[in-house]
Image 1 (cartoon, one colour):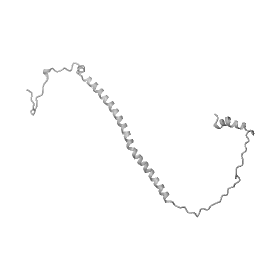
Image 2 (image 1 turned 120 degrees about the vertical axis):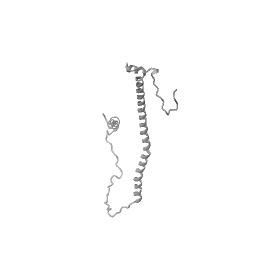
Image 3 (image 1 turned 90 degrees about the horizontal axis):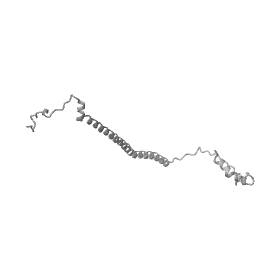
Image 4 (image 1 turned 45 degrees about the horizontal axis):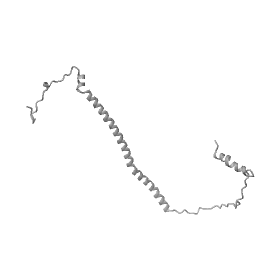
Length: 151
């Protein structure tokens, strides 16, 4: 795979060199003041005292205390919304679970009512169960404190 520089050389730069009469010999004109030399002088800073800028220190302290306080305030503002989001998700899950359990209870009640129906009781009891006759019903006598009495 060719690089961008190779593609550039193949397409564009190669044509420019071929079109030049000297075939790649380019002369650069001399730069002005290129014969300037640098002189470095050593400085002795041992007697220089540093000035303490109290306003800079107070500004730094102010920023260093304000940024964490703003971050804590921002987090404190976001916590109730996040808690409500988690709580609503949990409530939704519990409602779905309740629907499943209510449907299970309804199914079990339907099965139970089918088992204890009079038609099925006769099948389950076989010859051991007899339906009582209407004359065989015995009423319990009312208590002495009863207001209404049977006649």
